[in-house]
Length: 184
Image 1 (cartoon, rainbow, N blue to C red):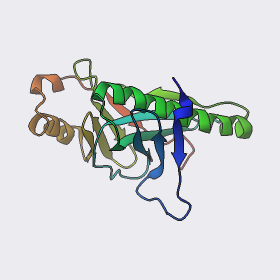
Image 2 (image 1 turned 90 degrees about the horizontal axis):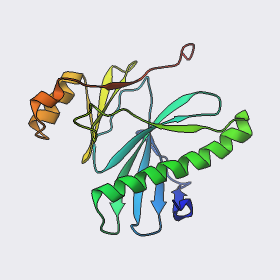
Image 3 (image 1 turned 135 degrees about the horizontal axis):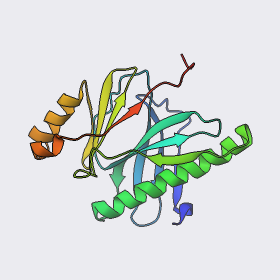
Image 4 (image 1 turned 120 degrees about the vertical axis):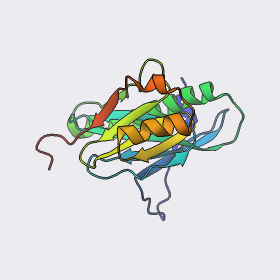
């Protein structure tokens, strides 16, 4: 894994909104630009994007947990979806390396990375996240990210729009992003 191929892209004149934190660019083949979004426990998600994505948890040096999602925005080279997913994981690792160095200076301890649990064993490419305080759900699937009001709505989307078999919906793992105790 060559993390020197990645760059964080910031425009000091541009005010990012909608949870967009920054962009990460990969200069080696395959070249791509991924948008990095943060999801907050107390805000309803408005993420509804097409494109390969990777949700991940970042646990800061002080123990506070943040949830991010990288979404592939621009692809300069052709490659398979499987390989792009691997490169998104590398981009997440690159971001972790940058943040962890700052955390070590600030908190005396480096941060860590964790991935979310899949929807179930039969659908490892699908992930469902509940933003508990905002009472909304975010569905991550290979071709995009969509926001829903309930697990049932997300399941119906998987069945009707993405053509997953209804029997696959019987067991679902819902990841929960809840506010920390005393964080209100």
